[in-house]
Image 1: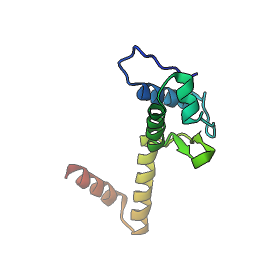
Image 2 (image 1 turned 90 degrees about the vertical axis):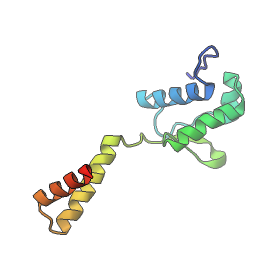
Image 3 (image 1 turned 180 degrees about the vertical axis):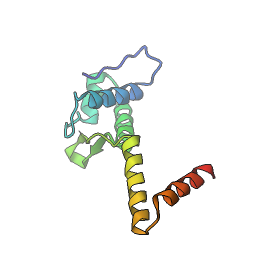
Image 4 (image 1 turned 180 degrees about the horizontal axis):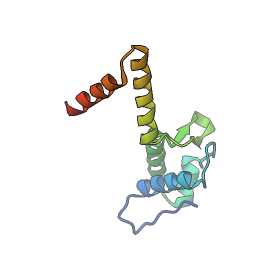
Length: 117
């Protein structure tokens, strides 16, 4: 499932990180899937544990996995896309301006002014 190409110019931790993201994106790893322990995966791939730990740490920082202490590391639900986040922010903004009684034309004007500044 996960493999490291020792002849690649890409560092092993990055190869691992990219493969996990690809498996999550393809559905091969679904939310809740338990990842191998750092030591187990390092041994299986012939890597130093710190290499796997770095990949896991970066995956966690990016929101792809979560570490639950001694319980292990698990795939998280897919992070929201930038488009989903932007739509959510826009919806919150528009709803708040509606609560304030701001017209649609003024709302658009405020956004335009902000974008031009």
